[in-house]
Length: 191
Image (tube, rainbow, N blue to C red):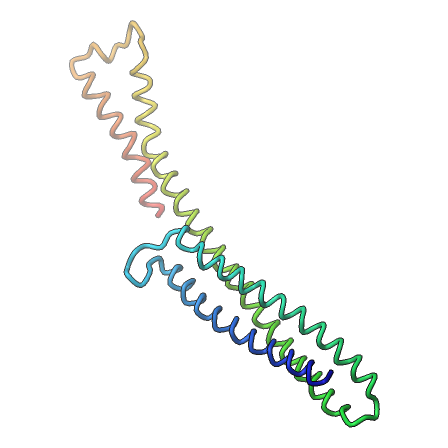
């Protein structure tokens, strides 16, 4: 039983090292995404992060399973220690339990790292979404006043005095342009 628990603990440690290496590679992908461009200089979009997110979710699942396994192994080792009180294996089992606790702490650290990386990706996605909404807001702010003016003059009224003026069309066009430029200047100054 001792040999079996020892082997399972060693395998858990190997799995968590593999997951740690995978998380480091994902960390590089996420860092590159936050800069906005991939290795070829192409802009990274939300769809490009799907693969990284699915890899991260798989790593989180593996880390969670190893964490659960470590809890069960430690429990089995404590039961084994209770059954072998005063025997030759008691010291070895105590060392094994300490080693299992060390692996459990490593697993906890990797689990925290996965959560941090997931949070980083979600924050990056929120920033990208905010940038998109900002662009739509600017477009709306710039084109809404001229659209309102054009809509007003597109109505079929029988009497619109400015259309009979000598420079009525020019005045309407200039008013429309000014209505578009004022929000654009305001937004530009506000950053």
